[in-house]
Amino acid sequence: MIRKDVKGPRESTNKIKLAAAIAGTLLAANISGALAEAKKMPDLTLRTMGHFFAGGKIMKRKSSDLLAPGLPPLNTMKNLVGQAYVEYLIPKELRAGAAPIIFAHSGLNGMVWQTTVDGREGWDKYFARRGFPVYVIDPPGTGRAGFVVDAINKAATGKGDPLANSPFFLQTSFAWRWYDVGPKFGELGDGHNFGNQMATDKEARRQFLGQLIPGGPSGGDVHESFIAAMERIKEEYGPVIYVGWSGGAVLGNELMMQRPDLFKAVVSVEAANCTTLPLNSTDFDSPQPQKPVDPKLVSVYADTKVPLLNLNSEAGHGIWSGHGKEHCRPLVRAIKAKGGKASNAFLPDFDIHGNSHQMMSERNSDEVAGVILNWIEDKVLDTSRGSSQFDAD
Image (cartoon, rainbow, N blue to C red; front, side):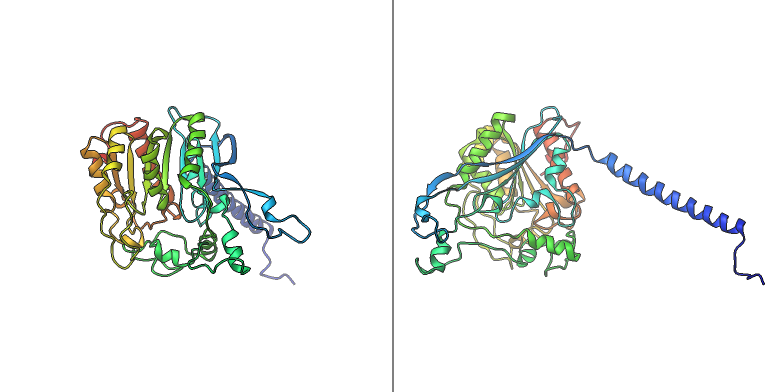
């Protein structure tokens, strides 16, 4: 008896051929898509990569405690304190006129520049792929620069006074709210008062929290360590394009006041403060009033003609939520009024919407990096053609 549901040889062969054809088409489509994406991204071919510590001082420990039973006391030993950690990528072929780019943060670690929370390449690779020497810096007391543990050790063992404040700083999931990533950890907002561009899957949330590593006293001067790093970089490739985020942007202005000769340009990404004057408040429930611009800072930018880009997202930081466009604009206007070179870039004006304070970690991070690259080409390398959107106020 012949079963009617058994397919004949020709029918089976035809189905196999059809399946193979479909699979081949899908594979070709996937390969084609991958190749198309690869063509959009320049190759990353490095001459070298590495890291070094900059600045800091070798200090003799003061404690008579033992490092461990049977070992000499700490006061017979030395440590390097106050150093910055610098990691670099040097492309094999540098683009014509390319200045070194350094990325500086404040309270997290250099990973925010090196990868996004959803696992894509960060801005360090973005700019290295386009021919720029790139340096990522962890300031003293943060990330791989490390911090000094003596104060907390003494308090913990009863050999020092109890600590009135917390000298070791650890952010929590509240950073999601504080940076206007969304109204609640793991959730996104309307794209205006809160961002809607951060990846929110389980692994992305883990990666976000993983960036919030402890920081503490450095035992040194952050300005000194950055100047040491920038002097070394200048010897190799010339003055730097300084890209600072949040508190790192404030640091950039402070360093400009001290050593403008080390700067080719400054990119201020979501500056925590737009002047070297103190903050008014950390109240995130209402926008922070603009602080009067520091006339000394304005004069430094105007006199040196070091170009400044002030870049703000739509949602901004919690202390100016929904008011990013106005933030830092007075500084830009004051510099331009004195004959300096300054530009203001509000991302929605470039049709880039929904970003939070931590824009370099979000799903459209490459689009944001493209705005910075266009400004560098236009205002720093002078390779633009025609009028620039950055000329608008």
